[in-house]
Length: 182
Ligand SMILES: [Zn+2]
Image (cartoon, rainbow, N blue to C red; front, side):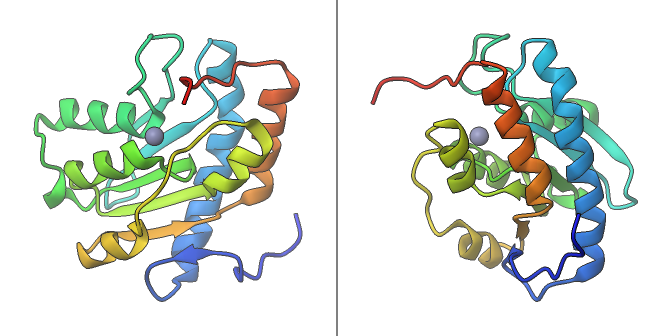
């Protein structure tokens, strides 16, 4: 990998290199682990939630196909798991960080807001996912600014090479691109 300059990082705060470095490692690992989830029939996105001491709390993949539920995106599955573990529907007092292999869709943007997650780090942007795979990620509100207003930090386009490779592999291996007719 070429040495990153972080000029392509997307963020809603003044860039903190230490946060990006930490996120690069976590997200690149999630992109690599995706293969195992796909082998089990899961979808090609993985999310992990860490607490403020950098301890992993939950990790989940997209399970729309294998669990037959259109809501089962990786982010939603990870949030559900943490809320069960912490026994609360309001995670806002825990200063949790959500790491995702790709930009959240419109449903997950809402889901993150409702959960009280405080920090979001994502790999490849939706437009890259759509270009490679044909998934339709839906329209987006101006979510980075809306999150900023609510005190939620966002960093995106983290470890993009690993993300693009994972998506290309998903398609090359003939996996399903699911979406309803629109
Ligand atoms: Zn989603």
